[in-house]
Image (cartoon, rainbow, N blue to C red; front, side, top):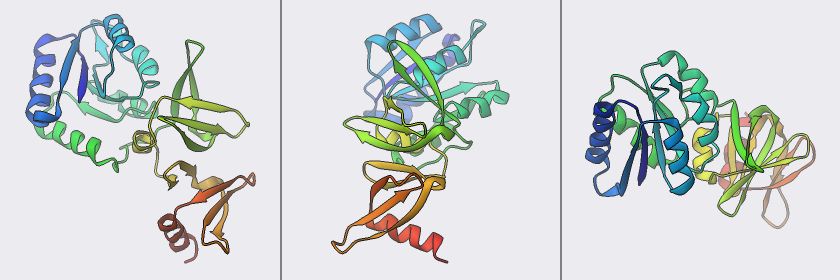
Length: 233
């Protein structure tokens, strides 16, 4: 892993780095420390990271001004902050986790275990996702999203108004920050269960799902059984 730590107090930054090295051991490749929002923004443009550990108060600067930009990136963001009252708002913008200061090693271990499991859910509900278009950051409410589909190493969010938004995320990482109502129905598709109209299988043995706008999507056999159990009680 390549980790970026954005923290303006050097002793705390070193403590976070130490814990990361102790927990990850040979899984860790690099740790980069940055103390200002401007330097963090610059290094994100020039380097690839897997995880960003971000403080929300950097010498009086509001970390949320960086958060909206970096959530467009492919990596997950974890807030490490004493401002616990900001946790709900942070989760709404799709952060992976919120670690309150003062912290300890077991709390980081819990976060990393969930990171590698690819099955964990947020402790709060993500309300917004962001993406880059023409060098601008755009925010979309997830209530506007019909479904997601894989597009190589990216994900297309298909909106209810007929438009699409290209997200710099993999399906696995996106699935980790979506609320429970979004269901992975196929390796290449995630849908809002509130948008489902019907599902079934055809004579060829393939399973299909239909959304309320008549969109037809492929359905994994295992998920078909889960949906049948959920809706045919």
